[in-house]
Structure formats: structure tokens, C-alpha cells
Image (cartoon, rainbow, N blue to C red; front, side, top):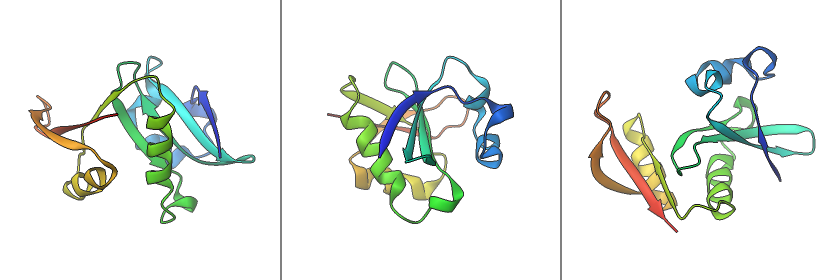
Length: 121
């Protein structure tokens, strides 16, 4: 698996449907780690230098193979940060992120009222 920081160009994105799901494709301050096997992109993590994880995306053709878990764990273990935060926007994601090691913080996003989760490594 190859990791590299990339800038996702919305107009040139090979996985346009996946990019349309994430608003960060339009925000140049958000960084992306692309995960690929050879020349085949598998997915990416969008994040900020602060450790805020904005999104985890696995391209459609690779879903159901535990790549999301692998990508997120690899991203965390290879980062210089020791604390990461994210906000699950669906109930089932809370259990998913807890299974990776994230914990609820009892803090909530002000606009959406979704609970923020964090992991300290």
C-alpha cells in the first residue's frame, strides 16, 4: 500500500461521484492522503494539520474489504499527531469508529449537533 499526500482536483478526479460526496474537495487548506495499490487508487483521508479528520473515503469498487479500517489505522500510525478528532454523521459510524479506538467526547458540533469523537495515541 502506498501513501502520499495529494491535492484532489475536483474537475480531474477519476472518482467524481466520491468527490461530490465531500465538500473538502473544494477547500485547498484540507490535506489528503491517497491510498493506492500500484496505480489503482483505493481511497483517501482528508485532514487538517491539527489532527482533525474531515473524511475517510473508500472508492466504491474497493468497499467491503476492510480498507477503511486499514487506511485510517495506517494514517494515524504514520502521522506526527498524537490526537485525532472526527465527527460521525450517521449513527452506525459511532460503533465503527469505536471499534478502531475512538471515544466519545461529550462535545458536539455546533451546527449539526453530532458528537465529536477522538483517539489519543
